[in-house]
Length: 244
Ligand code: SF4
Image 1 (cartoon, rainbow, N blue to C red):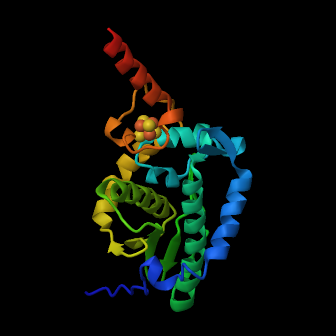
Image 2: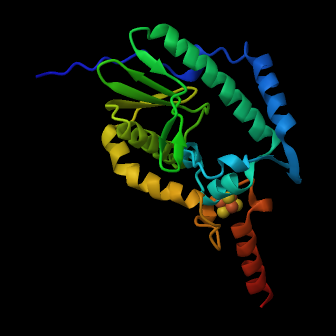
Image 3: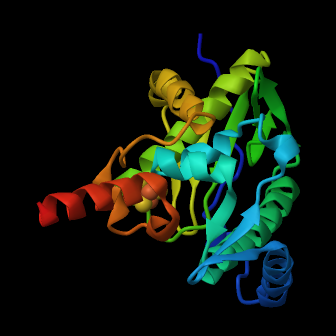
């Protein structure tokens, strides 16, 4: 028997969102974020995490390539430069408009954009879930380039959403990773294969800092080095060794 799975219209973000026309909306969103931010160190700012939410861990943390960055986000809050906040503002606005577009062109589907899924201490809100006979999951990332490290982190995040949807008895048969210029069908087999890894990784978010960076290669391009405890430990050790 052939089961026909209907697929909605899915396009890269930049094909459906007019980024130039949304400049003032991005500015407004950026100003909102800046108003919440406090100066932390040098050019770094922080939007403190809400203490009442600290027990709830979100799969969106899995998009961070370094587990220490996840712990910092839970313990301290969202840390970044003005550029980071601007990118977040762009992402928020582009996602909002993409979701509106998606609804308007896929009227045959039930579309959910604020579906809060929870299990134990994990609460996640996938970008888009659509359903007809079966369901599909869409993860939006407002990036132009995707290296292996980031793709891996995003797929790990999708694996967690997939798992939460499965626990809610939703039959997800398709999953898509959509960036500014790409649309990728991520195999369900790849997602199921990464659920345990995602769960384990997410557990680290509510733990303590490791003694030293788990993957020092990532520190080279990380903006968090001035405030990162494991990085400071590593630097002190290296300095100690240098002096001995
Ligand atoms: S400085 Fe290194 S260990 Fe610290 S968050 Fe960045 S990548 Fe991770």
